[in-house]
Image 1 (cartoon, rainbow, N blue to C red):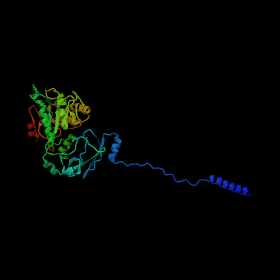
Image 2: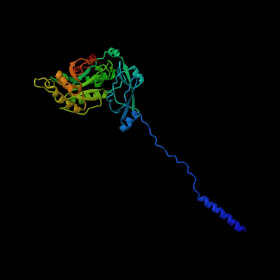
Image 3: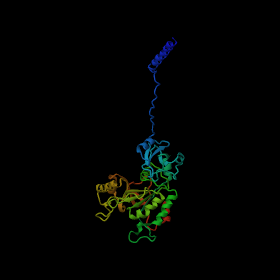
Image 4: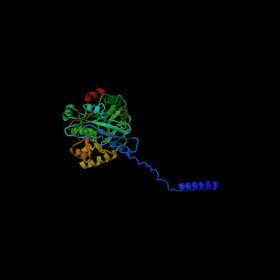
Length: 355
């Protein structure tokens, strides 16, 4: 009996165990599924993300009355196309690296297209400043546009009827060092245009450096000096003769026409012999070759009302002459004067003309 009872007990236990093993499982624990995290990018971050390039840099703009959206810039290049905001009753006074320097409108650190782009984590913030129209006028700024031609390494100069065109490179070096080390501001052409309109404040010590013809001596002798001192300069190229790439990021290529740098029917330049439509056709070739219009230089300095019409017809906003003078508020944008630099004009001569 004992054996039977034990068997029954064991059988009962086994049946119960079998039933437990086959019962329906309890409701499983709820499974936690990770949801993807969607990061919302700022407009500046979105620019960098879309560019997908380590050189990309998003420039953001801050300051009283500043509403400009961020724009893409490129490290190891100069700033391109920085906005010039407008505000009723005020004159824009430029971009600065800090709010404090903007409040002081410090020209020593003012940022424009003459400056290389420098970013931290592919972003940079620029701060805008303003002046009143009275402050703008009181500054009394008159911008000299320096005009060089050819260059020579011979201190005694070159011979021939073009002798005066050849600046001695030692003088050029001293002049560029003076500009680089004594607090000059180098406006871009779009800034000069806005200054003429009275929309942009430029400091009194402003200067623009230009070269006519893009002679080989410009490439061999002068451009390395510009690069050394990190000074923005413009080379006016005759695109029928050459279309070399810029020798430095600090050298802008602009038009000296395509093929009008030669005499017309009356012995004067083609610029004052052709119709406005012919002039525009030539300048369109030059503008297309260089990829920019904006400003041109009249060959031989020859121009008249028809020439100015042709320049405007081709979409150029400004034109530089060889007439002596300085650019002030309200100047004729199609007849910009210059400060000509010839052989024998050393540092003292430059200082006497631009300070």
